[in-house]
Length: 139
Image (cartoon, rainbow, N blue to C red):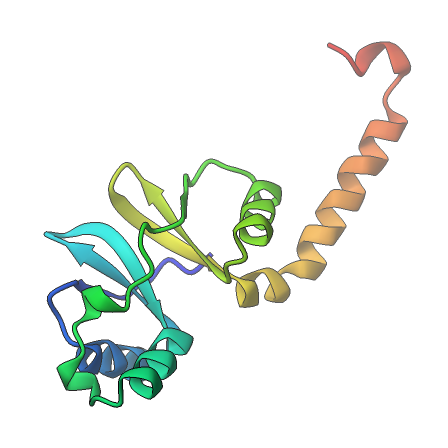
């Protein structure tokens, strides 16, 4: 999970979103309404909006492009659930929120970067389950 989430208000233009993406080297910006999470704009959204509208980014309001409602997950949920949600919803970015506070974002790249560690932890858990006596498995 990336904890440093970049955001801007839905009244901003796509030019501002593009500036934030470039200056922070990120592929998405969480869009807020009065500080509360509202939606997300990704690099792909920028490209589509610019191409389809034929307008400059400064002329396109962020609220017209942002994916809404925002797909979120609570910070105490499992990685497996996050992966399942991303697959089912066909999304590459899942925003982690605690109430209305954005805590982070999980991306496909995060999952790829940590795949080895996650796989080792899963294998260790499976091995530990196999080693437990049969009677203690259901307690």
